[in-house]
Structures are given as C-alpha cells and as structure tokens.
Image 1 (cartoon, rainbow, N blue to C red):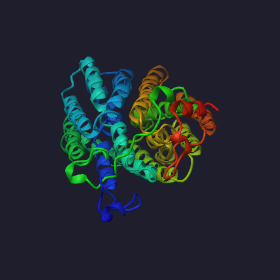
Image 2: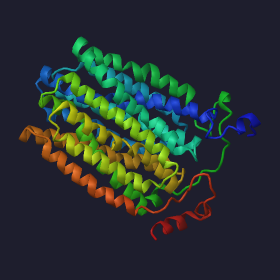
Image 3: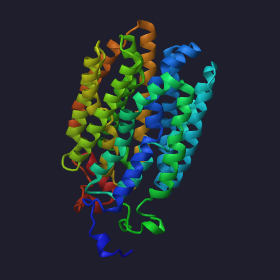
Image 4: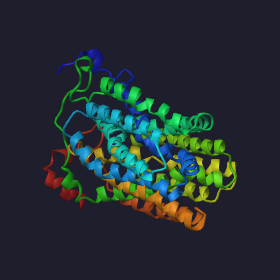
Length: 433
C-alpha cells in the first residue's frame, strides 16, 4: 500500500511515527494485566488473608503457583494463536475475562479451594494480558528502535509496581482488602480491554483509520521446531528461568518478610514500590542499550544485579538497607521482559515469534510459580528466608556467566542480513557452529 510522503518520512526515530502511539496503548495494557495486578500485588494480600482465614503462607503461595503454572501451560498455545491471528481482539477478550475473575477474589471465603480455583482461572485468562501478545504487536511495528519500544511497553508493569503498592496498601488499611480488589478490577475491565481493542492494531492488519502503519512484508524467520534445536534458544531460556526463580520468590514474600523484621506495613509497601521504580528505570535503560549493544552482556549484567540485590534483601534488617537492596535488585529484575522478545526476533525472526515467546514464558512461569512455594515452605519450616535467598543469588551469578556464550544475532536491525536469504535448514545448522 502506498503511503503519503508526510507519513513515510516519519521513521521509528520520530514521535510522529504511528507505532509509538501503539506502544503507549500496549504499555497501559500491560499495566492493567496479570503481571501487575496479580503477580506484583499478591504480596500485599498474604497477611490479610492469613489473618482472616487462618491460612499458612505456604497455602496462600500455592495460589500464586497455580496461577503461574496455568500461564506456563497456556502460553505456548496462546503464542501459536497470536502467530496466526490478529492479537488485539484476543487480548481484549482475555482482559475482560481476567478482570471479572480478579473482581471475584473480593468474594473469597475460608474455603482455600475457591482461592486456588480462581487462581487457575486468572492464570488462563491472564495469559492474554501480559507481554506476550503486546510484544507481538510492537515487534511488528519496530525494527531499528525495537529495544526502546519494548522497554516502554514492559515498563507498564514496572510503573504499576511503583505507583500501586502504596495506594493499594492504604486502601487495604482504610477500606479493607475486598473493596480494594473490586477497585483494582476496573483497570482490566474499563481501561486495558477497550483501549487495546480500539487502538492497538498490528501493522500487517491495520484498521481503516490506521493506514499509516508500515507496509506489509513477508514474515522472515525459522520455525519454532528448528529454533528448539539451537543453542541460543536454550541459553536464553536458562537465563529466563533463573531470573524468574530469583525475582518471583522475593516479589511474593517481600512485604511479609520485611514486616516480620519490624517494618510497618506502609514501609514494606514502599519498599515494593522502590523495587518497581528501579525496575522501570532498568527496563527503560536496557531497552535503549539493546538497540546499540549485543544482548549477551546485558543479560549477564541483569542477572548479576538481580542476584546481588536479592542477596542483600535476604539480610536487610532496616528500612534503609532494604531500600538500597531493592534499588539494586530492581535494576536487574524484569529485564527479561525486554530481552526475551528482542533477542527472539534477532535470533529467530518473526515467523514463530509468539510461539517461542510462549514456550520460554512457560519456563519463566514454572520457575516463578515454584519459587514462592519453596520460600513459603522454607519459612514455615525454619522461620527465615535468608538461606534460600542466598542460594538463589548464587544461582543467578553462575547462570550470568553462561550468557556470554550466546552467538551473534542472526537478524540484525535495519540492515540486510545474509542469513535471512538462506534456507531455514541452513540457518539452523549455522546456529550450531
């Protein structure tokens, strides 16, 4: 489709490029989804549920695990669908389902099975509300500035982690946890879902009013089955799993852990916000750097920062020590949200982009679901988080070194890549050399 010169001249570096408007909508969508509302804010509801229903922390953590495992199971399926159909309609529908399920948490009873069943439903519906679908949309709009665009999108959950915890904790204190959950459900139902449906088209299938998107082009890349035979895929997945294990265990138990050490609930919530704010800064910085530097070194740095911060969080006994540790950990935490889609496009192209993202996120979700359960079990058995967090830190440091063995990108940005013209079988063979 021919486009007016005034539009054609607005490349990815221009704020008038229509893809940047899509990026902002996708950021709001991520902020309204499961990554923020359930996985980030879950920690603030542990003690209220423990107090009202008499559940143990390990039992409450099982709900987080069930949601994460549901995401793990559904993500590859969702990825296959997103590779074949227009993402925005699917995402909007899943956002509505997630919002209704999230609102239903306000009606919890002492029956633990109800919490667990709701968590499974939220995990299934939430598969369409996190970065998987939004990254597919944005990766189609951008190439040379892909890292920066992805960083803005995934910063949505970081912004939520920065802004929402103190507000949510205040609401829980003043109004109770049930009304707070109902208020939060407004985000997916009346913000995320309609904005995504109306204003987040894919570039290959723009709406009549969005004909200023980039021109259609053949989808390049290798199949998901061929990608699974490459060293790059499994190294990336190793890093993803390690990061998830480290960060999700801390994220779920951070507020009760700090409260146990004498910090007020409001101060503990503020520490969660510091972690989220630092994560926003880290993701934005990472996205900018990704457009200029190979991802292997960035992955190593992110793992080292997250591991170091978690190590000191496990030993923090004061507000200032916990704040500093959260600041360090946050710079590395969540960087995989930028790295996964960026590196998958650079190594494997767009042909099976969402399928591969879904497969990798299954590993992320399994590790993320196991970590809180493990920390809850260790705490119930020993009354301390210190040793298990130290173990996670050591693991992160070890895996960070493996990231340096990643090969060079296969599909370089804004340049003619010789590998792109080779048969797919040849590309897969080159990966092993």
